[in-house]
Length: 270
Image (cartoon, rainbow, N blue to C red; front, top):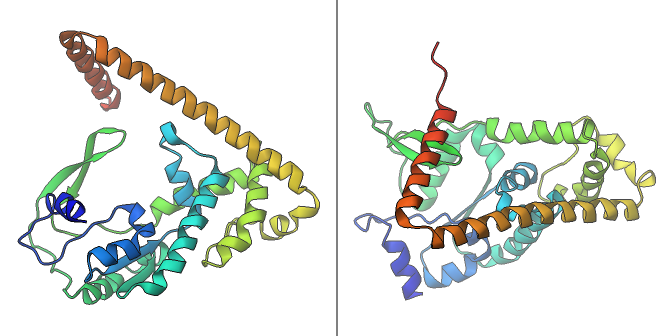
């Protein structure tokens, strides 16, 4: 625990009295962290499984099938539901509720951790943070709170709607909607409501057997395995080349790739 404390405090401003650590995996370590940090306060934000699962798939090096992501969501939240009964200080909210009324939750969160919402500064500075794959990064305010938006979720909901209605593999996605609908409903989420497929999906079992659904899932797993293998193979070759190429040549290749990346993202001048 001393090593963990030291590693976190190395990045914290130790002149402050409130410290924040927001690693997603902390969801599975709440009781452990409470034992190590007795005065810890936990803020748990739940988010709809569709954007959670789809957003994680952009990391191709570890890409998993969508049903695997759904199972992961359920497994993690199931463990958390067991652990939360032992937590002394806990505040829960849904991401979807937060973006609809951020001011309300800012005030409640400030009270929960024993502070207040800072006043909006009259003047503020901006800073650039890393944003994959944008080589320029993302410009964000230094002190002003960023505006919350439901757009980040909506793009994944639009994609899910398309997959259910128009995808050549819509049988697979409709099977997932039917299979996981009751499981996610216990957490207040739905894979069918709002996607114009409620009745069709809920009565789909008679048209699509479990055997066919299982075949779809195995095929999806096989496809994502091929994608991971290809990406990881390329990464392995890249590491081997990097270890063997002369340093001047590596620097030259790096500069060329950077110029190509910048020119690709540079807007046309009219």
